[in-house]
Structures are given as C-alpha cells and as structure tokens.
Length: 434
Image (cartoon, rainbow, N blue to C red; front, side, top):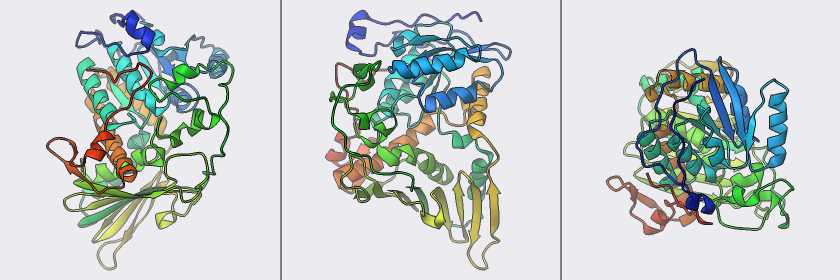
C-alpha cells in the first residue's frame, strides 16, 4: 500500500543516549486509511498481551503484520517463526525506534512493560502511526498527561487496551446505572481478588538470559542487576516498572466505577494495606489493599487481595453500584441487580456476549478508517484519567497520608504526594516534551 507518511526524524546524539527525540512539526499523519486499504501492523513487545492483541487484530479484514520488535531475541525468533508458518513473514527489530522508521507500518501495538508505554506511544505518534497501547497507559500521572498531549499534537488514533469497554454487557450495565433506577448511589465498590497468585520466591541476582538486551529492557527504569523475578510477567509487582494490582486490574474495574458515576478526580484519597498475604516474598507492591476515593456525593472503594478468590458478592473481580433501590454488580461474566425489598425488581445475570478483545480491535480499526477518534471506546484521554486515579490510590498507600486533591492545579495539597506524581527516568532518558 502506498504510504505518504513523512519519515520519523531522530537525532543521533539523542539516540545514542536512548532519549526520545520528538519531531518539530505538529502532525505527521499525512494520509487517511481507506475502507479497502490493507493495514500493516508492527508490534513492540510481543511476548504476552502484545501477542494476544496481535492475534485479535489479525482476525479483522485486510490486516497484516509486517514487523515485530522485542528486546528478547528468544521471543522475537519464536513469534516471527509462528507468523512465517502462517505465510506472514515479518521484519524483526530490537529497538522500537528502528521499527518506527519503517514507513510501511500503519498501526503499532505496544505490549511492553508499563514503564515503557509513554516513550513508545509518544514516539509512535510522532512517527505518524496509529497506536494500540496496553493498559495502564502510563506508569505515573505525569506520563499519562504527556501521552494525552502527544495524541492531541500528532493526531494519531490511540486506543488503550481496556477492552471491556467494547463488551456489550458492560455497556448495557453502565446504561442501566445511568438510567437512575438504582436510586441514589452513595458507594461504588471495585475489587480484584486473585486466588491464583502465589508468592514470588526470592531469587538471587544473576545474568540476563542469552539473547536478552537487558539494558534496553530497563530503559528509563532504575539501573539494577538482572533478577528473574523482575522480568517478563512479574515486573508488575515492582514499583520501578508498574503499580501492582491497583493499576494492573484497577484500570479495568475502576474504569467502570468512574464511567458509571461520570466521575473525574476525587476530592481526597486514603489507602491502607501491605504485604499481608506473603510478607516475605520478593514482590514490592501490596498484596492486600483498600483505598477510598471521596467525591462530593459518593465514595469509590477499591479492594484487592492475592491468594483469595472470594471477594465481595462471592466474585473474584467486579464493580458494584450500591444504590438506595438496589445494587448492580458487574464483572467479565455479566451483570445482575440485587433489589432492596419493595423498591425495585431484581434482574438475573445478563451474560457476557463473546470475545470483546476482538470487538475492541474492530472498534479501533473503524475509528482509524473514519479518521475519527471520537468513535473509540477507550481513547487515551479516558484511559489516562482512570490510570491516574489508580495511581492516586497507590500514592496514598505509599505516603501513608490522607491526600487532598487541588482541582484547580491538578495536584495534591500534600507535597509528599506531589513528588510521586512525577515520572522518575534514569539512564539518560528524559520524559518526552510535547
């Protein structure tokens, strides 16, 4: 497919340091993708959700993967081989900037650890690509805001991997909440009880596996010796790279709390918890946490616990809107309403209706072909808000303070909390300037 995008500009000095270099022009999207065009996809980070996202988008018409990038050569070789077996040869890269230089790529899927999302999304937008970025969109409040600004400046269509927004039963449940039938909603509960999560065993530092560019994997994170506990899936439980269950599952469940209540930032937030299930394991983030987000007329309460399956209402995960007339409980399996006696009729389980990740990709592509970000089910602006609110819960836990939010300045009144709003970049990397 002819591609008229301008080439992604980079500065050699910045590349040597690993610093993101942004083009000086305001918008690199110089053509629209037509309804009949083949759409070429590149994937940055193709081990876990990056690979799952690719499989989902490849089920859409006229989509082809032409490039993969990963700092783990073992993963890269495996995935390239799987695609070659499907008659889909790809170019492979270890540096995401080299993939972004490929002018034939229309869409970039970012499935890397959280601490890389901001740099790679901003670089992809600056390179004129549309972007599907995994959740949480950023690993700090500052990064989330930078990512919003990058989308606005460069005009890319950016969908975030909170795919439940594309699930019909989730949409139906929120419409019911907005109908007012539950009456006055004073409390919303969101939770993730993960019984499958076992202790992360302590392991000694050592050498990175053969084929892994560990320096690139670290990127802007604090320089540390390689430790297998911090690599691949378990990176989620270390503050350098992610925010534990509060951001990993919180951005799914809290997203519906915010959406249902049409809520923005809370007035104040407090949190309590710690490593209560596995106090001696290797992880840093709390395995048990309760956070309360106070708004003008209601509270949102977040809970998570590892090693336990029986969360509120006997469910491992969900969001419950507790109203004067009844309570609507929603999760990935469906939604139902428990009625207050004599105030409304209960509603039986309204079940999930199939693969919503595929629906999410179909929505993404429809938005691209219409050149209309307003059609997105999870645009970067809404995903950013949810990720930021979840970050506020983590910050309240880490500071052990009741944190009050300044709605005019979009920061805390507490200095200790404000310090943790910022991204902490190392190794010569700088937070992108938009």
